[in-house]
Image (cartoon, rainbow, N blue to C red; front, side, top):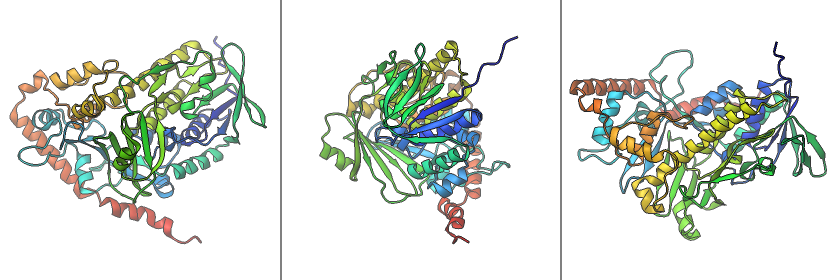
Length: 491
């Protein structure tokens, strides 16, 4: 008979940003008899995951699992919803496209999309038609989260949440305190080795040591714990990712838009994230762009400027230390990839939590899958710079891993090869590539498709769009109705 493994007695999470606090909540809920201690350190502006005001739809599911209510994010953390991301100028001047979430598009309609208006360029007969019900709703400014207990015309719409990062962190801290997570403020001044390749304890300046069985490094790009391990190594991504400086603005005027924007300018890429507390802007440039030119393109004063050396760690779990988010990979924030990667890594860690005796095969499997996640983000980002105008602005870059095959298959056959642990499902990646200006080809079976089948698919799409528009209220009106109770005087 095999004896059960001895459970972890204490876990230390290093990093007091929104990622570290959420990791502590997840670990405490997964191991209620284990003490979880957060060693709080204010994250630097370079820790993009900790300051991100948004994520991808995967985070909604993680929130549900961890008991973080969407209504609470809306009411108490400045929450709002994103249905689509609009890409502007990546395929050339005047080119535009849209990324929506999920795999709800009829395959026949996807074929028509590829043949008639793939690549996102304006049609001679007028503007590009919407490619998803989510885009129809975003264009009309109509949406409300569908009720979970009944089927509605909005039930198949995948969406992302946005929030005020500081308020969201405060909400998570309340959850962590209610679960009994401990908190220590302090600077790590030493890492004490244990048996073999493990860490026994960390030392806090003027406060002594904290021992633990397991350590989770959420300290951002400095990877305070993982980088102290003798086997720590980095993998360079600079050949394929050209961004070297990121300019971050403070919040501008509040916006309730259902879309965010990712534009390519002559100076570099510009991300605009709408929010109830203001519009956030981020600009990424090469080394050749001057500060004055970058600030003019940013269109707002810079709250911070981050120097970037893109790359990932060779192994995110070494000994009894596992790193998440920016402690594992450094790359440009062209979208919410940082926090999405961190949350997917956290979800994987929950699947593979060790006992006090760590099994090398489990650690190796975690590293394998986490590396695939990081390389999936690497390829997704490199797609932007492989686009027609991306190459013109940033120069020709090397294509990492299997990205050349992906581009070839999309252009020749209109398909996306399957790969493990990708940040986007195939239909989402197809939409992203079209939004970036890649012209999808047609699979052989599509060339013989009957015209009336496409007509039926378009009629069905139009009917679903009409039903969704009739069902969904104006988004600003829905937000106002949600926030009204919170404005009522106390008592």
